[in-house]
Image 1 (cartoon, rainbow, N blue to C red):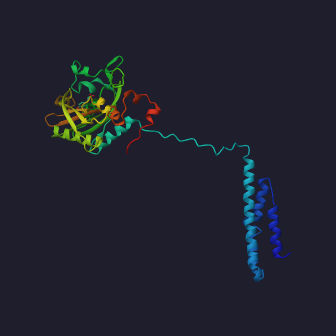
Image 2: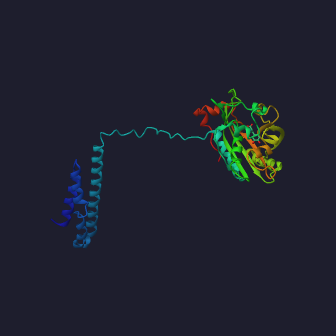
Image 3: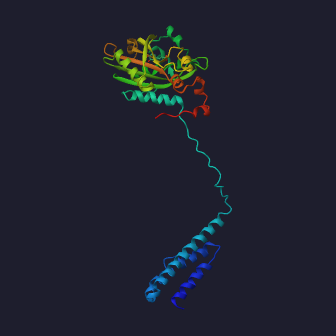
Length: 342
Ligand code: DAH
């Protein structure tokens, strides 16, 4: 049998080979594709082939190798499919199951924006407890027990413990921070607060505030005003205007409420600004010397300003939400509509 016949015989052997088990396939692999396979030595036989047939021979041997490769792969595939045949193969033409992306809560989005804005000018974030002692929430903040200002905020007290309550404002964090840190103090305190109010579209028994406090030597009302203006421009755009109205809070003197000019572009603007175009966004003032004193800070040496803002109100403005209760119902259809404008 000349060398060409040998190659032809091997080719028909490969073509006719069949097996239904792994052992048969393995012996095929060893014979034709293993490290000592039968095709390999044929390549060196080429030097014994007459010159005019070298090319033909080379092509045949290559074809042999390729046929062995293909046969092996196809038998391997068949074996695998038959061993998998009792596994249910999914219908790949069905539409996929969409991945449900989470969304940020609108309160979280606005709160993060506020935090970001004040971080950029050096305010640190301070957080503290929601179940608070009366002293930090009221007394230290210049609102002693029989003070009429306690009526400004209806309080949830802890049952059988009149000294403990759900904080009515994040101003409680002011006294927490001032009793434990030395000036200069520059913090914002974001968090949830509680008031015993009838739940309606406009008010709720829980909401969020961000408190600000800056205590150092020589802090002035001008610093306060400029800080608030900076905030308003970052939050509401470079053309935002603010106005300060004299007000009263027990813990600040003088005190002010700040409005931002929202405009009167449509009917909703009329409704939410009561026809004035101005919207109240926060309360603020110079920290009352009595508060500094209560917290062990020398009011002769230090002055400070403070402010507190509601978050839901600003989220309602920004997203045109007209019912505060939506923030607390966790209805996914509502919550999935907001995305952080980062
Ligand atoms: N705590 C006040 C409230 O909840 C808001 C407030 C007003 C906070 C004036 C302040 C401030 O820090 O200086 O209504």
